Length: 166
Image (cartoon, rainbow, N blue to C red):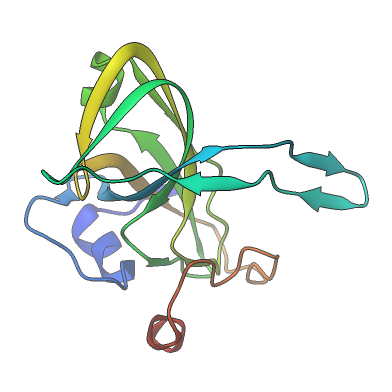
């Protein structure tokens, strides 16, 4: 496996990029929407039931004001991972330095969508602007293409035009 340079990885962001998102070893992902959890989730051998969520309102100044707790992040940026590539998502260090943790899963080869992650605020309170860069997606090339991802999250959070582009 080899890390794909950010300039090449940027070709797989299908929602458009802003200046500063392309990094030497990946692409920064921006904060789109935030949700807080209101119920119980279930993960069983036979399937899953995701917990209900409620959208966190954005302030009039464009910032989310977050208290301690757990939030679901929906990234602003939509991606299309090639069949010979896997994506690994990491928090930007500024989040960690503010007492905020971001956890992401593996982005499988062939996945197309606007991904989600878990944001945990450990600090008393933080303010994060909608559209701020909060994660870096690093692309690793596999030794050979594989069967593309076809799970329940394929095309998540995409509009019809974005599905066609992916």
